[in-house]
Length: 298
Image (cartoon, rainbow, N blue to C red; front, side):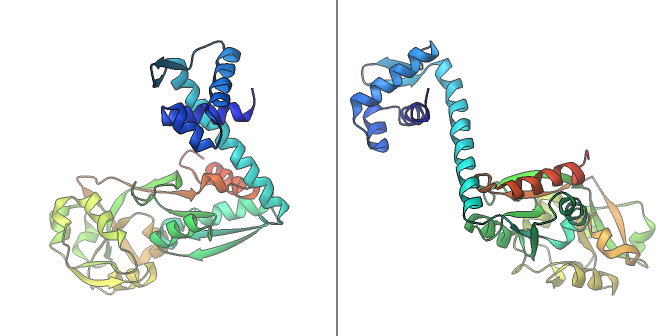
């Protein structure tokens, strides 16, 4: 069995037509049919049901399709990895990060990574989620430590969960909420709100709607901030309260009080994102380090 057998099989399985598969592979139809029959003979199983011109996968064929795709993907990753090394790439890893979500994770990961890969330089880029996703797709970033992106926005990106954080409301130390164990969504929405600016953080609105429900479809903000530092300052000065994940507490320290929300909203998920087909040895080591030292189960 050779790689061409797998490529031919996947093409026929996806096209469900030998003629179209042959055109896609730029080969003539008779050799393609012969290669498929040779593959079936070697496996000792029929991979396709043939009824006239119609071709469908057998149960064995469906199972083999998953394995063939995985094998071809792994080969492609190996080729890209070797090409990157041959071109002198991979000694530097470009990493995007969101300061608030990554505040507790990133230092741990970098400290451990530099111990096992002391000759690799990690260049950090403070970016919003849309900027990081664009950077990953365009190859300007190799990895990003960020909130889990929505399915549509994260298409083509591999996201690995590292930690989950409960959602809370951040308030000044002298705010009435600071003496409470929990507050309701209705009570929060009755207060002036401080949040991230829509221009720089367009996904913050979706973040709120996902956690607080329909009641927050059109929230009115007393102030919109361009980053975590200014957001903390706005809340501390009494301009409003802020709904955020508990990682905000690592940035704010004792300046703010985080109060639980009832009913408990879905947590925020923070992890590492990358494009699987562009994995290099150094990037793989960085991802593995993140799994081992920054995961919830680490």
